[in-house]
Amino acid sequence: MNTTAKRILSITWKVGLGLAGLAAAVFVFLLICVWYEKSHGRNFSRDLTLSKDIVVRGFNDNTVRVWDKAACKYTTGKLRWVAGPPRRDSLTVFCSKEGRRGFLNVRTGRIVIPAQYRKAWQFSEGLGAVVWDEHVGFIDRKNRPVIEYVIPFEKGFDYIFRDGYCTVKYWDVDKYRYAVFRKDGRMVLGWDYRFIDEPDGNGYRVAANDDGYWLFDKDFRPVFPEPVDYMELARGYSGVYVTKGHVKQLLDFDGTVLEPFIIDDTYRLKYKTKIHSEDPDEYELDPDVVVYRVGRWEGLMDARTGKVITPAEYWGFEMVSKDLIRAQFGHNDEGVVMDKRGKIVKQ
Image (tube, rainbow, N blue to C red; front, top):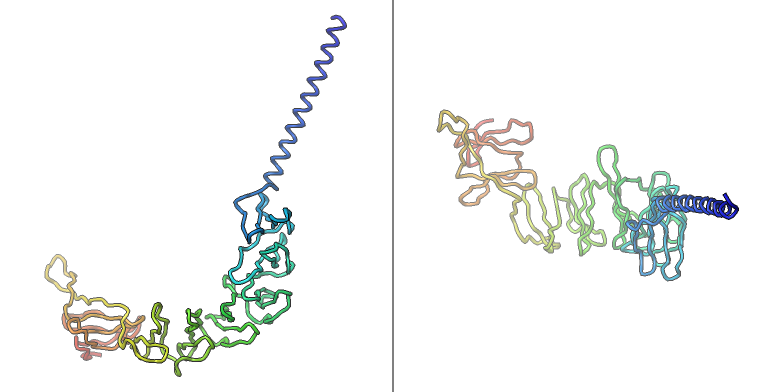
């Protein structure tokens, strides 16, 4: 092999090695890029708009960062998540990579209260609920406690102010206990309530304690002087459904009766007959009486005239013959037997 051929072979060998090395380097670089993109690249499905210029950018490592579009820069480090924009304020909740909650401004994207709480809820009407030592309290925008940590934490419940008040609850042994707090920390309804509804558009709300059901106005004054057996606001009406003594009525907020007798449902009674020997349990409808319901309780009504035969104070009814009816006072109660006029004929 002459000198020229040797030189060409040497150059070719070196070029081949160089190209192989370059290819290997490019391959490694591409692997690194794929790994980085998979671990740290953008995940657009987690993007979230907080305000005009502030957005949350998602990444493939299950983290997010807040991005200021106007300033073209990130305003936070990586976080686990950021909640959506609140309806009633400008501060929303974020969760740090360590699992602690804090607050940031949705208009600037900047953290205003560092991550330090176990749980937190979006600010509403200037206050934010946070959990400290298994109890809920409310802080202001400067992280100062306004309502002390006296509310037992209830998982799955949102602590949000609406029109100056926040309804709270917790599970106590065998039942829920409710209360209502004002923004200055005053408790306007105490923990002796087993139910407190959210207000309607006029500020009226229903609450219940061991005495019965009450109706309060927007200033938490009782609308009616005494509790009743059951009560619910009449949606679409300027009034309330009131059940007392097994009678349900529609009242306005001055106590005037708008509808004196309301029932929730009806059904026809049936009795067994033996018309066909091969089918001894065939049922037939009774044409004379109908059962009406008020809440859970039932009464008898004349099917032809609509006249009430018995009040709605029974658990249930069944026909024992064509002319006799068994009425139960409880689920396992044997009950009494009456005729279709409501007269008891057998104990």
